[in-house]
Image (cartoon, rainbow, N blue to C red):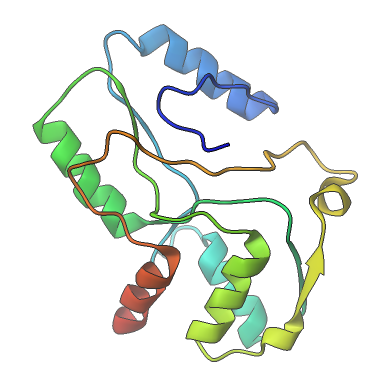
Length: 168
């Protein structure tokens, strides 16, 4: 099911649990803004998932991507504009500033390959169970949506990639 602002959190990892504990402490006096899988054209400080996948494909490296889980990629420029709107209309509540669609990591990687004309045959499939074996727990279905965002139209993943292509 989608995860909305009013959904009851059920953190499965230590990091997520610590964020939730922090939210409970400040929720009555602070605005809480949740984002998911941020990406953008240029950000030298840290590689996001988009640039990591794109670089692997450009270097002709194969990837095994999860087909049975979801992520909600969010274009960073949308986050910035959304935050500006939220701060100008401050209210101590929870908001989700997330992309307009959720998709599997496999589909996200396929979309990157298609949009940037990279070799899609380098992208293999794996399951969530196979990927997380011997790793820390990760959320499987991160279909984050907003009931409250009527102030900024967030881009779909394809729309965000189109915007990135204009700046590369």
